[in-house]
Length: 215
Image 1: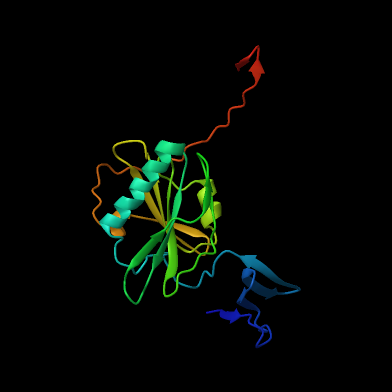
Image 2: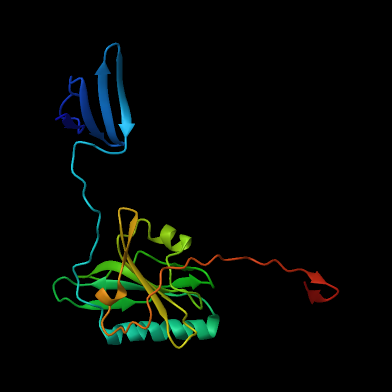
C-alpha cells in the first residue's frame, strides 16, 4: 500500500519511492525509479475504493400553494412579456418554513439577470426557481453559468404558455449539477409524462430593412 500524503504545509513531502500527494491543484503520483524522479498529476488514486457522487437537500417539500403562486407569476410574465423570470428560495431551519421572493431583475426571452445580494434575517437562500418562457424546462448553458457558484436547489419551469408545464430540478454543489426529481422537492405535483432533458438550440435571426420592409 502506497502512502497518501496531504500537502497541507505541516510536513515535508515523503521520501518514499512511490507515493500519492494530494495538493491544491489535485492528485499527484511521486515516483523515484532508477535515475528518474517525478511528481506528475493523475486522475485517481488506484489503490482506494470508489465513491459515488451525490447531492440532496434535507428540506421539506415546497408547499403546493406556494409553488402554484410561482407558476402563476411565471405565466403572467410570459403572457405580458414572453420572457423568463426568476424567484429566490429562502428557508428557515428553525421554523421549517419557506419564503419565496421575486428579486429586482432584468429579463428577456432567454435569460433573467437578477440582484443576488438579498438577505432575510433568520433564513438561508437555498436556491432558485426560474422560468424558460415558452421553451422546455432544461438546464441551459446560461443557467449553468448563473448557478455555477450557487450551491443549492435550482428548479426550471418551461412551456409556460401551455396547459401543462415542464419542470426540471437539480442541485448544484462544487460546480457540479445533480439532476433530481421535482416530485421529491415540490408538493402536489402530478407527473403526466417523464422525458429526458432536451437542450434547445437558441438561434438569433438578424433582419434589415429593404424597400421599407424587414428581410
